[in-house]
Amino acid sequence: MLRFSPRTRASTTGPFLVGMFVDALGNGLYVPLTLLFIREVTGLPTPVVGLGVTVAATIGLAANPLAGVLIDRFDARTVLIGTYLVRALGFALYPIVSGFGPLIAVAAVISCGDRAFYPASSSYVAVLTEDGGRDRMYALMATARNVAFGLGGLLSAVAVSSAGGYGLIAALNAASFVIASACLLRSRPATGERLPGTAPGGYRQVLTDRPFMGLVSVEQAFTLTKLILSVGLPLYAVSVLGAPPAVLGILYTINTLLVAAGQMGVRRLQRHARRTHAMALSGVVFIASCALYALAALLQPGPPRIAALVAATLVFTLAELMHATPSSSLAAGVAPPALRGRYLSIHQMTWSVGQVLAPAGFSLLLGVAPPLLWGVLAVLLALACVGLLRLSARLPDEAVSEKIS
Image (cartoon, rainbow, N blue to C red; front, side, top):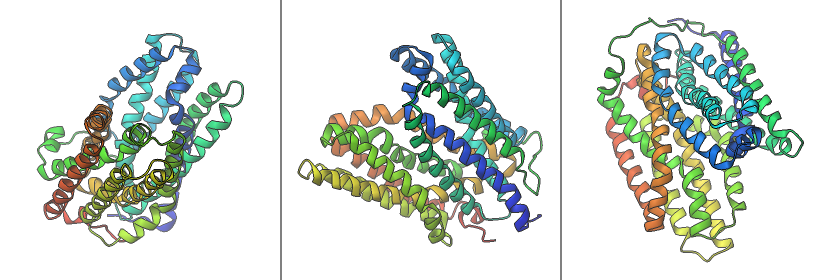
């Protein structure tokens, strides 16, 4: 297999990382204001916007497995550029949306682009790093995207304070996708990327690959846990602990900044560890964060509980840092190149499933008994840790251990 020279590696991965940064910068302008942004830019009532976005998100679920087929039929870079262009079109059209039907159509286009983006970007990283350095590239991508997302959030606060700010956000987000597409056009693996047009097995092979589906099962526990920060913690902190809503912004900022700052350092510490074991250790740390969140309810209301929330979020963030890179690299390493798109689309489906289960599931557990939420997550994580240790010997060794180049 051909290897990248340092110059070639820089020329292929540099534009890719710049594209990831620009894409996330545009998303940072929009994501924190999603429903408010759509309401203001379209002029539609809030209930109409909420229903339209829900319908569009449901339609978008189909894009995930479809993206897997397209990646394997064509190539990851082509699909990734496609996800950028369809979302650029969607955001450019938002300001002229004036009814429920057009809202669903535009939001569905954007949702399909969003869902297809993740298997496409993960597959392209795998192609770029066939000669080694996959963990480092995933860590670099996570760092670039978190920094850009945080900057985008700050810029959105400035944009919405000016006249026509929401329209400006739509235009800037559309432009960010176009620029990201241009960056991807300049990024091409030295070893070539295009795979045969057809591959035997298809999704049947993926779904009957028992070790890989075991990996997807344990990943679901981690995905549900990660959704706590955006779905479960706001309700728990405000309704159960009586914390002021402003604390949520502080916790989110802490998490975002530390993920951006710590990804490369944590990756270096994990470099010689088996990926399954690194993920299992992150599960133990996640369990510790669940225990700290639960213990916060036993403290006096006010500053003690807020301090406990901050401490628990710091531990949670450490676990997130420990899990992200080995998880992405392990899934990409297990996938056969000819079916990588399908494999990674199934792996990414854990987020789609989690986003369906988490809102109702977390609310139900908190309604029955708040400690039950943390207990259920801890049990799921413990089972996932045991599963990872058992899978370590069943997965290919070249996927479990990083290739040092």
